[in-house]
Length: 101
Image 1: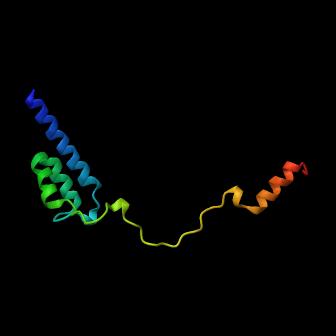
Image 2 (image 1 turned 180 degrees about the vertical axis):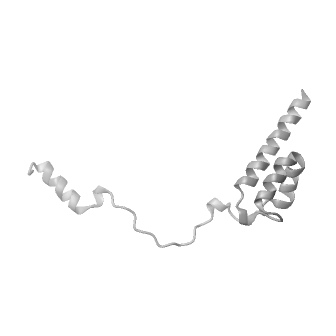
Image 3 (image 1 turned 60 degrees about the horizontal axis):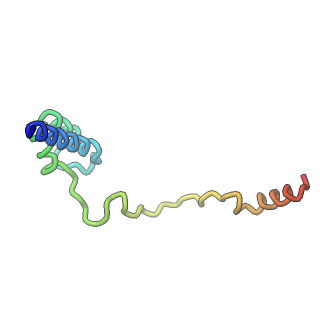
């Protein structure tokens, strides 16, 4: 029973490591190109996973997670107007409600 649990834990660790290598940005991987890290983790499941976390995984920058960091200001188009914000639409709607088709 303990052997099965250990095997499942090793499998979960290996799959997590492989997923982490694949989803890490190429430019942030350390010491080796990303393709080599994938090969190392696939060929040497336990040792490759440990090496990835020690030597290859991108360093975590201090501060909020990448997804929560503010984006640089980029010019963008104004948001679209809803029908209730369009005066022409409101005039047309009012005219239709009065029955002036």
